[in-house]
Image (cartoon, rainbow, N blue to C red):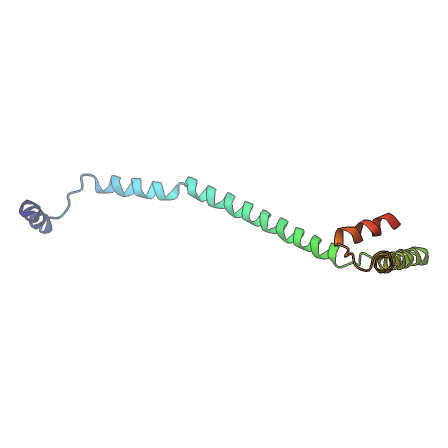
Length: 123
């Protein structure tokens, strides 16, 4: 440790000696003027990031556009009537399944799977 302190004390008082100061300055300046590879990578990253952001915004907009419309058909009155009749048939099938459960066997319980099976048998 003592040896390192001596070396540091000797170096504190000395100035660095540069052989060709002008040549060193010119080489540093020429390195600064040349386009570096890292600038190219940064430019490519910015272009890719911009393209991906635009694609993500487009997809979110498409999702919002698709979900903003009702899933119920609204083109013609016949389609609306058919949709309502289908809903009424489903409701009546559920009511029939529940009513048949009580009529067939008042003591025996019925499971959800059996109700589902009865519903699909009617349709």
